[in-house]
Length: 357
Image 1: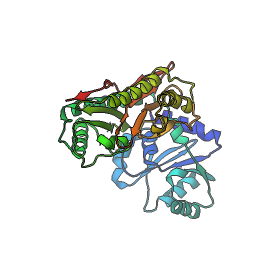
Image 2 (image 1 turned 30 degrees about the horizontal axis):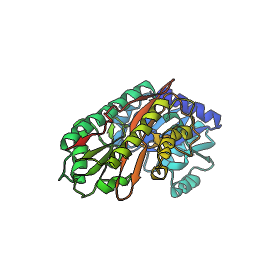
Image 3 (image 1 turned 90 degrees about the horizontal axis):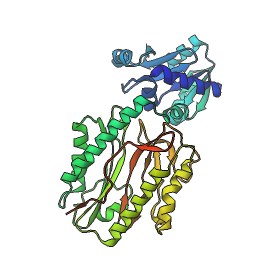
């Protein structure tokens, strides 16, 4: 794993004429090395792959980071880095500008002289957009756990239960079944609160006549799932059915026609045009989807602003919605992998309009 990913990073470094790159982001460190400890740094040159960590993790790092030279850094990480740069004759160093705060940059600038600092963006993230077969297998496991969790919640969901209780039960089930935690803060939004796209669980009690939107995911073996299903308690009105049917049509249409070679903008339009055609375009205010992997939001985006071309191996969500303040809302979301001919679902929960009496 590590050697292939490091080789890909080195190719990206050549394109930007970088002698070396200093990786400080936790997720990027784990992606490159497989090391799961909470503290560590990665230095990649064209000849060396080095993982620096502290005394606590030396044994773990040696076990997990195959192909990496493991270095125990001193009290000052910067001093250890400076010694390594000098030993390799490195005169310029790329650093992850999104992961380095200004005060740290100033310290690097002062302490790493005469090495020149070069801000870089998206080097590792560009590699992470394309999932290999091992990653897809892990993501399918995370998706399967999300599907099992949804089925479990259908037995729990009933009038008189609070959104907080729902969220606790949902997250407990995922942890009992292997997740290290939720992919993000669980969204349970019922009744009029279902019109809030990111309505995290509250003290509201589920009632007859409620839409209930559940948006959640499992973080399992370092990879995320992200699923949304909306169900109904009681007897839905014609308006409730109309809103649900439109969102389902938009989502199914997108899943059928999304394909490699499309831009994120074109993928977004597949869902947005249908919702707009029914007169609810102004009630769908977020993007149709986003990249998914070791983080719940990563590249690429499936949005009105995205010109990124969808390619095989990318994993994205497809999650159109309609939100009507004072009435409620519906969102339906699946995780999909882009294939050579279209997309393949990772989440497989039913999307029929489930009505709980």
